Length: 549
Image (cartoon, rainbow, N blue to C red; front, side, top):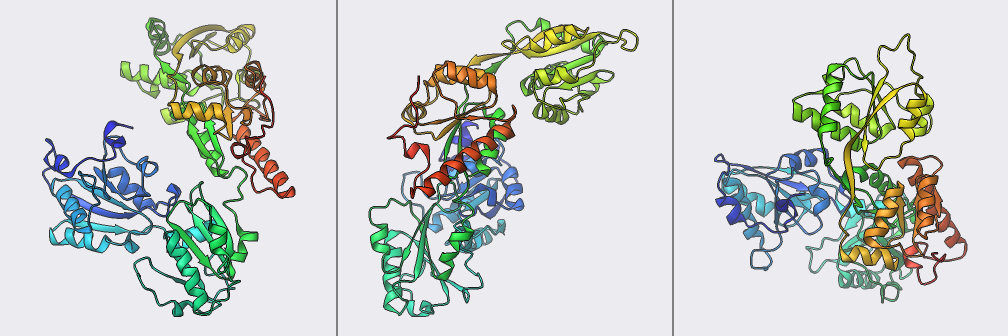
């Protein structure tokens, strides 16, 4: 992420006056970001974000949505002016027109459904008056999405429709919502929710009517309190819920018992440390999110070029001149290193013509395919150097025109594959394609969370991630669940005084995440059986499960 993209506020004046701005008039797209879950963006919204020069955002729509943008996108806070004061709707309209007149493609990213957001019409009218082309891309409305994520489909058959009491109504006529069979939805702050419960009782809704209040809906921080209209003030007292809240009133609240699919995910709300670089952590983090976890990526290594590049240069020249029959890739980083060398020499995937290519696993194979190379050999069993050797053919002097293998790898890689290939009759050019060095320590907040038990789990995917995390941030707290991708990684963790709670059935990202999810589900079931409401390790760290060595 570039400095522009990370900056919370870039002034419109600088944007409009910046040298090199487009001379043609730009455009404005009013895009609904949904209620919080970045996965609820529409395809059209993603397309517009990827092409945007400037993104003007609201409160909820933040960095996660900007992942779809180009690195040089300019980010503007649409809620606050240069002096820190709150921007009026009219001021935002002038901001948008000024940006568009400077030739910018502007995305006005709005919370929830853009078409139902206060101020959108006025901002769009400002564009129309200025002759600026604009479009409106509706988003998922929080008034229906949040109850759905909380297990309460508002238009279920048990209800005769639903009513939304808009926050724009300062003095709603609550008698319109007195019908017992109707679902009532009330978004707003804490005080408004309590006032609504009192008003509904006053117009005839029974005090025992079921009510649910949800905070941070559709995100992994979602929390729902179930009560009744009469008991709501008591049940919300002393409970810290982030605003705005959304209250659902009526029989559909009872559907949570069977339809609460989101908050009951096996790792829901778990803060999981992923000690890998951002490029490497994508698949792992995505799978963790699928189980409701909140992954936090902390790089423990940095990948750098070899100190002496001559060996790699000779190997690439040998590849082009026909020196090798095989090239074996043992990591995505090795693929990236060779690809960068190819680009340096003006080569492309055609340079692999006549050469057989092996990949240690599916992720490495995918990296090759994106390079334009389809591997000839991927382990049929264990995705590791040992698994690759199991399937590697012996050298046949009669049928193999060459007997040499190019093995680009890390400077700290083990000799397993190289030694095994030699035993099979091959000659190996074992080349350092990249160096792995320990990353800088993470922010102090992350280090404190690691040591104090602020993380529910940490997923180790190699021995080096164990050594490097402990080296730059210290040992995880005794209450933190330790998950290891394989026996060697588990052994290294134990050598560093950590007890391994979860071991993958096979050394793969998929397997280690599934194993952690099964562990989380078992912890949740155990808590339910004992009548406990807390099963997240970070919330139970006052009584550690184990003692670190």
